[in-house]
Length: 227
Image (tube, rainbow, N blue to C red; front, side, top):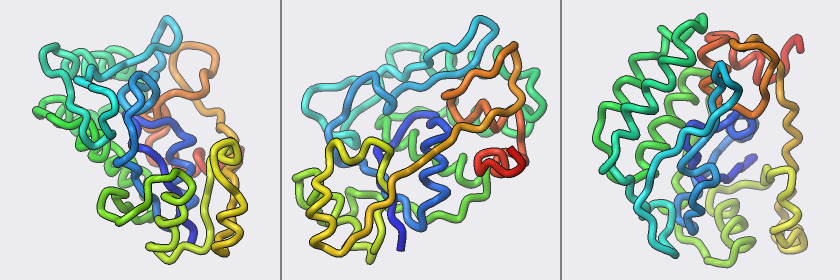
């Protein structure tokens, strides 16, 4: 069983979906400390002026965990995010196919950031027809030390292999994995090039950029088929 683990991101990029696609079980690490203005509450979309951030405002008090962080709904951030997608992607070939989902997401009243992020992640998994099973880390009994937490997740889910990020060796104790008989595979994601609006190709955008531009071909492109 190949396990991948990652914090829940907002409108995640393609490398995130590649990790989900390659794993048999993907664990959403929602019970670790939140890091403001990384990828948990913002991401990037492509515009006529190049890429831009879209950020969900949060009410965060150190050291809250991801699943404790609340959205700051004193601003019209959700209307602005929907309008940003409409303005920059309405002319893309497949935007109309997915517009209703985002209209619904941004019309709902969200309290916790994690709940909205998970809803979007589940939508992207469904849209790309990925078969990976999702598990919430907060539903498991885990130790707090980072490497021990990852090992506990793998053992609890009967995982014999762990799919780590490219830089995973910088923060993991690899010897502990070896002692527990868990093989580590490092993700080697090669970003695909595909048709985008607005000039030269810009990598590292939210996965919605691929989805709006390529629709039902998105999974083949993500996997590098015929690239």
